[in-house]
Length: 308
Image (cartoon, rainbow, N blue to C red; front, side, top):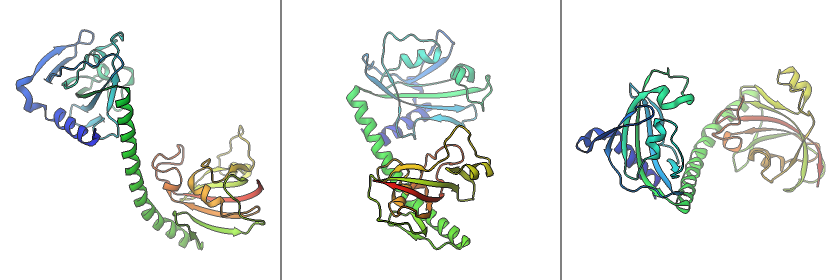
């Protein structure tokens, strides 16, 4: 199944319902009295255990979108279960969905969302809902759809990462020029400077390196360090954590890609600075706290010990 085409078709269906007035039929839920309109009625009821795929768009009374599955990597779905009771009007609507149903309705936010109401809405704000059920899949079918959606999303992320590496490289190079740092760049896009050569041979993947570090955003904000005094000086000290060199089994995916690549350039006793573009750090997701999406990171690192 082409997810993009399915999303487009359902989007056209649920946003273009006014053209289907000749097919309209109205019902009312027993629990909350939600009046909902069928612009198109489906016929295939999913068997117990099968998955009904749907797209859902929720908007304010002024047509501002609150939530939509149409442009998401994966559509909405529910697993059919005849023994599952409805606890509210929304449950009634969803549990009775059939493949091909196209439904719209309007109700107060407190009815639509219940206890999960967005903070931007008042309980009595009117909310509009458009719902379209477009397929029924068994377990194998939904697994295949999920794998295809994830593969497509990974491909898109890879393309976005290529673009970010270009734009963030310019930002990193400008930062280095401003700081007077002479940096080198790997083929993968990691920027680094070895400030002190270590001793011994370069390490190989699987070697354990003990690393003292300080991590900064590119604006100079310290977000993490293994140095207690530095943490205290920057008001990020956590008395419940251990401040000591971090053991890293390098080249094995235990740390962000920029660290995995950078540490393999170092030896025992090496000191270095890594300037890591976001695709080689925490990417689009970020890491919470101070590390937001697409954050360039700067690390000062020192290898205190190496154990093979």
